[in-house]
Image (cartoon, rainbow, N blue to C red; front, top):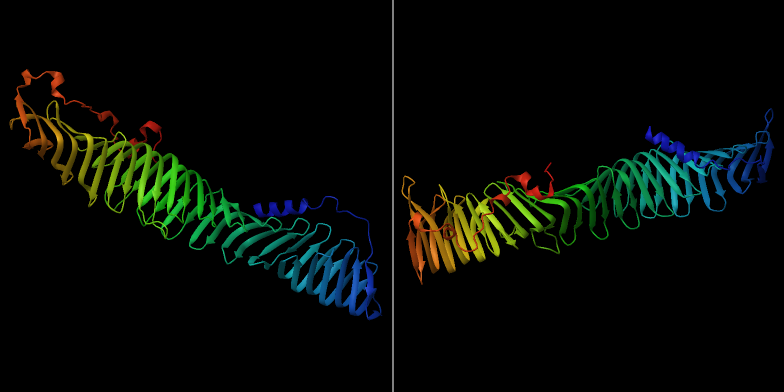
Amino acid sequence: MRGRINILLFILLSVGGWAQERTHVHIEHANQLHKTAGSDAVRLLGDVHIRHDSTHFYCDSAYYYEDKNSFDAFQNVHINVNDSIDMYSRTMVYDGDRRFAEFFDNVRMMDDSTLLETEYMTYDRNLHLASYPRHGVTTRGDKQLISEIGFYRDDIKEFRFFKDVEVYSPKYQLCSDTLYYNTNIEKMWFQGPTTIINDDNYMEGNHGYYLTQRDLAYVDDQPVMYNQTQVMKADSMLYDRQRGFAKAMNTIQMIDTSYRVILRGEYAEVWENIGFSFATDSAYVVYYDGGDSLYIASDTMFYHFKTKLNQEEKIVGRRNVRFYRSDMQGKCDTMTYDMSDSIIRMRVEPVLWNNDSQMTATLIDIKTANHAIDSLFQKGQAFMISKDSIEGYNQIYGLEMVSCFKDGHVDHVNVTDSAKALSWLREDDGSLIGINVSTSKDMKIIIKNNSISRIKYFEGIDETLYPEKDIKESERYLEGFLWLENLRPTGPQDIFRHHSVSLP
């Protein structure tokens, strides 16, 4: 129904001012003229030339009907309209009063560098409208356009193709249900299910346009762009093939199956030649590495993927980064996940939680292996804090700290430079022995059941065990202690807590 409405509008827009006074068809030349007995037709033979207004008709033979102001033309039919359009066929029927022609067999129309070929075509001189109802092929430059139904307005140089529309070019292919093509500005508009193929990239949608000279496509009705490993969806999308650039707006989802990454946001750009993309406005990434998925949210998410010009594979979050995985959660201002070495780098006020432990420092690097934390590096005012089983907090401090993990839990911690430890020591029944406070230049701390089990000291050792009653409340915390549990993401949904946005 939509196609019929578009056809009707296309015709109605042409009718203004077309009504004209009747003008007669004139015979300019024929080698022979014969009056047919019992008929009002005049037979014209040899080099026939007929004129109607500014349009000239040529053929091998014709029947001319003076009373009807019309004629039928046969063999090598050629029409020249206003010295700009040429039409050819084997047979033609022309009505001078209606200024309307029908062409049959091997029909061709040429306008500038555009060629239309079909087996049956009509041409309305009043409407400047050529049309074919059954299969036509249009060639312009290196492009070939095929459709079952087609219309051409020669005054505005615009085609309208309907049903099984196909466009072939060395640069791209396009398949659609409805396509408008203006040759003056080299722009195509499409409606209905449409696919555009550029090299290895496919773009699909239901409404948009294509600038043929710039190789630029825009889709704003259910657009999808994909290749063998990447898929991008959004409410609207623009793709510039020459620059290898894509832009997407609203409800964006980018999936890279080769690197197991899903990137979402409300605005995104992709630079495919240099292997770079980003999403912003409620942006987040899901990294599904065969095990537990890692969810990362930030003001802007960057994704670097491998290309001929780029060998990096990494995810970068900038501003207000929060992430969640079942074995670790964190927040910072900037985070980089380098997938080639499986290292997560947290910068600017980083906080990391693992089970019952909280880690802070000037910077934190997390090494992952086999879908779990392998080791942790903290530098600058490094803290590791965990809640005691009953009350209080076990604390480790140093300027640098390296933690090694086993089965997803901290196994031991190497603390270097200004090492300090505060631990609540208990009997097997849970009764408190005392609070142990120790300092040394370096320490190696063994962790069991999320508590400090044993400490090995190196240089400048100072260790004191205080009964609980002998240590003041303020002395139960190392200098710089901060417990930030209220900031900890509690699930994939909670990474957006400060944005008030929920995952789909």
